[in-house]
Amino acid sequence: MARRDPDRRHRRPPPGGAEPEGTRERLIEAAGEVFASKGYHAATVKDITDLAGAAIGSINYHFGDKEGLYARVLARIGCAAEGIVPPEGSLHGTPQERLRQYLVHIMTTMLGRDKPVWERVLMARELAEPTAALDSVIETIARPLHQGLAEIVSQITGQKASTQRVALLTCGIVAQCMYYLQHEAVLDRVHPQLKTRPSAKRLADTIADFSIAGLERMTEGT
Image (cartoon, rainbow, N blue to C red; front, side):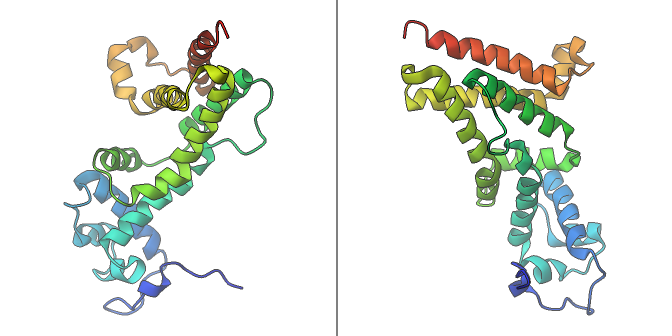
């Protein structure tokens, strides 16, 4: 059976008849740039269709409305970054070894992914002023990422840490990764010796060394 197009229910022929092939993809790319530059509320349908070289009715035709297009842009980001979570069964060894492997996978995947500049800007806007569309990114990336890390953190700390403490420790590890990934301009200015970028593995090992030492300290005396 052919896969049903989830946007098909919205489709009515745009003014002027059939559109050129690839219009839907151009709209998503153009929308990402415009939403990142202006924000969701300030961006207009005309801004997006002009940049995409598409008819004014194209957004309704393909996505229902501007909100539907915005949700699709964020869903695209989520799908593109889905590989950040290590595949099931890919981690081996002690909890400490698996934490190191987890971090190497995160940093290698994120630093190696070829993503447009607007994606980072748009996600920063979305996190600052979240919309309902953020839920798809949470379920695709953030929740599985945090859950996988939390399980390893819990194994390292044992009964010493409460579930709340495990959640805080997990967030601390993720925050270290995000700092290296999102604050290059700050690092260039504060630590000019880091302008020559360390490899993804070296960054991951640094985060792992710091995190494992702290987690193991919590287990002393148990």
